[in-house]
Image (cartoon, rainbow, N blue to C red):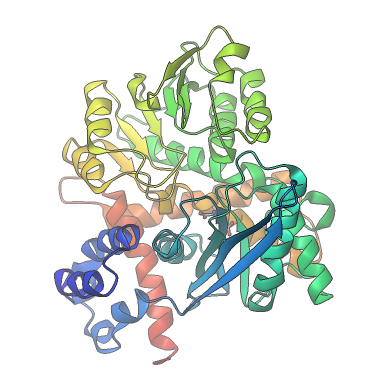
Length: 447
Ligand code: 2IT
C-alpha cells in the first residue's frame, strides 16, 4: 500500500470532503509500514475496502417550528464498518454536519471502537439541524421526525446510535420514545438513555472520566511517575465532555484553569470549584452556546472575549470541543507557555500541523480516538446491560471503564513506542485499532 496513491485516488473521487481526507491520511500514514509487512492485507485490499463506508443513508427531515413554519433538514447515517460488531457511534446535530464530517467521524469511530476491546463496529450520523435557540418542543418534534426515517436502518445487533455534539440525554430520550412507538420493540437500540429506561450509570460522565484516566496512565508511564494532583489543566468547550473531564480532574486534585466557548475563553486562576463544574450543566441547558455568563456568575474568573483556552498557561491541555479546534499556532503557543502534555478529547481536535509541532517538541500527545474512547466504551457497557436486562452499579461501570482506558493505553505503548523511547500515541492507537479490524475483515472473507 502506498498512502500517496490511495490518497490521490480518494482526493479525485471526493475532492470536497476535506475532513474525511484528513482523517484517512492520518490513519494511513501511521499504519503504512505495518500494513506493508502483511501481504495478506494487500491481497484482500483491506485498505481500499476500509476507507469506503459499507453504506450511507441520507434522508429529508421535515418538522414544524413553534411559529407554525415548516422546516426541512437533512438526516444521515453512515454505516462505516461492521467487521467486529454492530455499527456503533453517535449522532451529531450541528449546522456543519455534512457527508465529509460524518465520514471522518465514522472512519475514526472504527478504530476507536476496536480499541475499546468491545465488539462494536464504526458508524456515525446526524443532521444539519441547529439546536441553538430551539425550544424543547421543537427539539422533540425534530427528533421524532428524524427517527421516523432512521428507525428502519438500526437495531440492537445492526446499528446502535448514541449522542455526540448537540445530542445529549434529552434528545436520546425523544429519539428512543419514537423508535419504540414505530417498532414496538424495547431493546437497546440507542445508548446514552435515561436511567429509568435502560441507561447506564456513568454514561454522561464517561467520555470526560475516561479521558482523565487516560491522562493518568500517560503520567504514570512517565519516567518521573507524575501525579495529576495540582496540575493546571486548560480545557476547551463547556459541553458534556468538558464537564466530565473537569469533574474528574477536580476530584483528583487538579486545577482546571480554563474552559471556552465559541464566544471566547474563561480564565479561572485558582481552578474550577465543584459549584463551577455543576454550573456548566446549567449553562449548557440554556442552549445559547455562549460561555461569557460564566464570568458574570463567578467574578473570580475572567472572560477573554474571542480567545481560545490555549492562551491560558497550563501543564496539560485537553481540547474538548470540535474537530480542528487546535491549530499549529495554538500548539506553538502551548509549547511556548510550557505545556508538556496534550490529550485530544474532541474527535480530530488537532490540525495536522499542530500534531506535528507537538510531536517535534516531544510533548506527550495522545489522539482523540484513544483519549475519548471512554464514551463509546461505556455505551458498549450499556449495550451489555441492555442485552442482559440488568443494571450495574456506578462503581462496577466505572471500574470497567477504568480498566478499558488502561488497556487502550497499553495498546498505544505496544504499537507506538519509538526507538528513542518517545511514545507516538497517534501511531500506537491507529495501528492497534487497525490490526484488530484488518484481521476480523480477513477472516470473514471478501464481502
Ligand atoms: O465520538 C464518540 O465516540 C461518541 N460520540 C460516542 C459514541 C457512542 O456510541 O457512544
